[in-house]
Image (cartoon, rainbow, N blue to C red; front, side, top):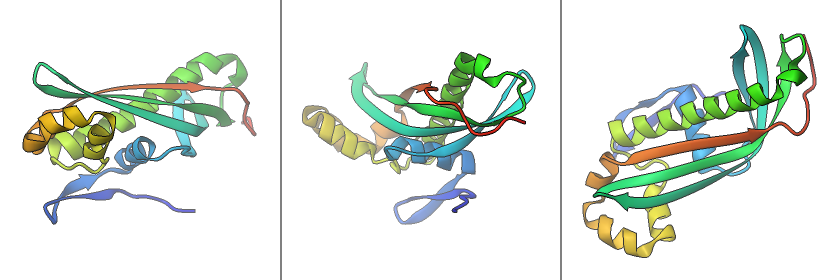
Length: 169
């Protein structure tokens, strides 16, 4: 078992800043496919631990009025690992929504810190632009750092609970 307590962000071979554990979790969900992780949430004042798994990420870059825009879509499955709710299975839709919002917050925070605050492309966004649209890359590459530092990220997440979890209490 590995516990991540944060991460370093480097630009031009120098430390630019640090990411929190929550931001590192967001980065992991952004750059890796089929991620499995536990996600603590609170519903109606009760603690619930969800497991998200089978994640998929789609990143679509575009240029809008001179601003580089990345539409980030993350989806996957979730299940209840433990819950203090009296009838957690009746809260399925609310828990799916909470999972999506929690992941969205982590990913948005990771992007805001690494890209907008530190100017670092730790998520491989230049590769995503080149792969998705070579013509867009040709347009933005001469001033890549400038475009990247002012990039806008639209993050949406969708998680579905197909199976239920392992404990209640």
